[in-house]
Length: 315
Image (tube, rainbow, N blue to C red; front, side, top):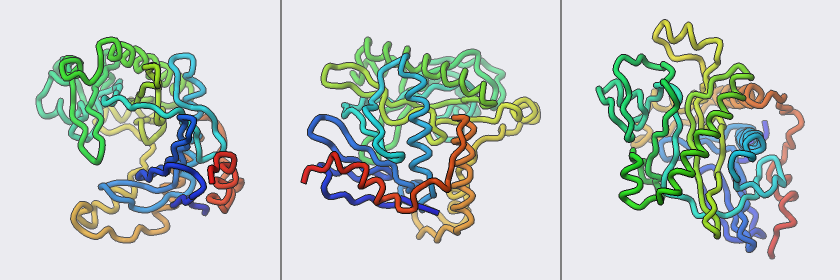
């Protein structure tokens, strides 16, 4: 199974090594973003999942194409299945999370906080009597601080965002409007594919003119929670989590065998890697409606990426 776990193209300028992406800043204020197959969790790279980088790039491409009438996005071109050329932006310090259901397991999720007795959070008051995984009366935005350099995201309210000067009032209103419209489009299109878009996060930046532009990725299974619609009602009635694209096999396997923040990470079994890859393929096909032809993927991905990026070589 072909894997792109490292990228080394010295002919490209201004390299920045991310956890799962390799970035090169071009002289024309654009950025080459190469999605590798690396899987990051617990502040480390656990393994690489075949096709992951290509699948996430192409799912994001599907959604960028389907939402370009709502707001501008950073996409300039796609020279390779694993690569997007994007407009280089100043990323805004607030991450926008839109939620349509009472769900989640992290410390910033509304379900975790609701179970702990909180009703006021993120500048919003939720009603009493909601059950886990229940649809909210209407979608809400739960913004968090955008943690750079390995920090942790912290919950914010709109009042805090404005008071701390993270965004101007006009920027906040624009981001909110874009986010709700993007989410509505996502839910509408997902429903036609037999899916529920439960929640998602958006990242925005500004260009040299101050224009707010959608960046990073959109509605991928890594940035969004999808449930299989036909499983929802029965699961909800029986207090179970609706079936989703469970890609956390590797994370769960590791956490069951060690403290991943303190102990050495055991070697990830090959069958676990294959199973996770199959989930990404299934997610791609369910979300886009297209068939993923694994046999057509070049076995030498690095050589293909390098070949397709030759027009951007500077040395």
